[in-house]
Amino acid sequence: MAPADAPIRVLLVDDQPLVGETVRQMLAGEPDIGFRFCPDPAAALDAAAEFRPTVILQDLVMPDIDGLMLVKFFRANPSTRETPLVVLSSKYEPSVKVSAFALGANDYLVKLPDKLEVVARVRYHSKGYIALLERNEAYRKLAESQKHLAAEVNQAARYVRSLLPPEVTSGPVTITWRFVPSTQLAGDMFGYLWLDKEHLAVYLLDVSGHGVGSALLAVSAANLLAAQSLPNADPRDPGQVLTRLNDVFQMDRQDGKYFTIFYGVYRPADREFRYCNAGHPPGLLWDGQTVHDLVADGPAVGMVPELPYDTHTAAVPAGSTLLLYSDGVFEIEKGDGQMWSLEDFMAHIGGQFGPEPMIDRHLAFARGLNGTDTLGDDFSMVETRFPG
Image (cartoon, rainbow, N blue to C red; front, side, top):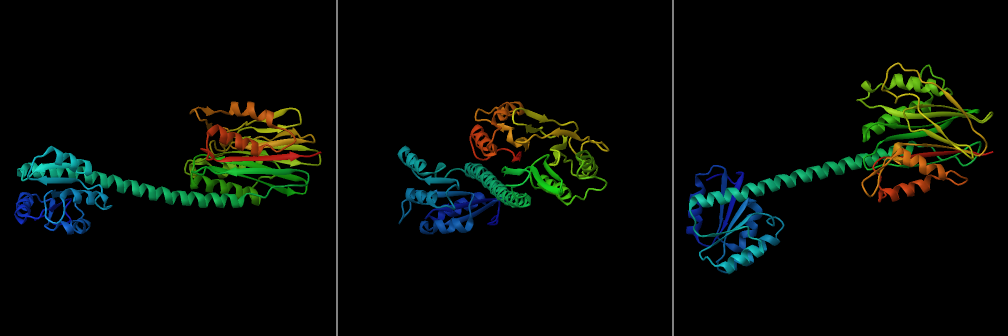
């Protein structure tokens, strides 16, 4: 007899030992088919739980328990709910067949059929059931992996958030921000710091790709900026800063990842804003009347080696607002499946500048476009106001 751990396992529930021996002999020559005979229908559920059959053959006429009731019990039991069940009957009665199928039987045989038919039915039903078990196990492992990944992403998101600076509510500038990570966590990072008493640096960067790897690269770049530890770069000169970042973070040393960044330095004494933009969406400077695009003039950091970046200058009148953001604020899939574009964003956001902060309004607007609170990419916005 094939062992009980054979790939195909047949449990026969029948009160007649002769039927049990006959089926055993039918299957004896099949090395990949295990067989167990249960002559006591009251013990059938326990036998199934122990043996874990890939197909159950069950008589419909047995003492002490109605065969149809046993079919119902098998289908109500979690361990046999999906196990293929072939009912055996000495009578060919359509009404009995209908009842058996209605209760969850998969097949019906008038006993005892030919050996070839028994083996064929056993293999057919077992093959489908084994495939179902394998698919369920694959889904279980996938769900477990996704759960583990989600936990890692949530932990990484908490870490990224812990590095973000507190909002600035008084002084020469006020700064508010919002960071809403996506379910996959992208590579957004931003910050601002006083380099000395006369210079405030503000930046926002976005690493290519999604996941923990992108987030860690963003953190690494932000740590260098926060520590002002880039060699041969004056942190007050945005062009020098991006040139050295590009030297340090070449994509062939970063698993193919690169990042866009907008980096600017504000000097309150003369209200001058110096900036450099490496492939990032344009910073928007509102002077109280007009929105000025602080556009990119160089590729993303890491893409082109030994590339110098230039510093640009803009005047910042009293009452101005500077808006920095990642592409997650405008690359939004709308409810109709169409993508909102940068052009759509620029046309919309121009009318949002004014005396009141705009970030929360735009976040609510973006969620409304998407139709859900969870956006497809990290949402990062930094709003810097320059009072008179």
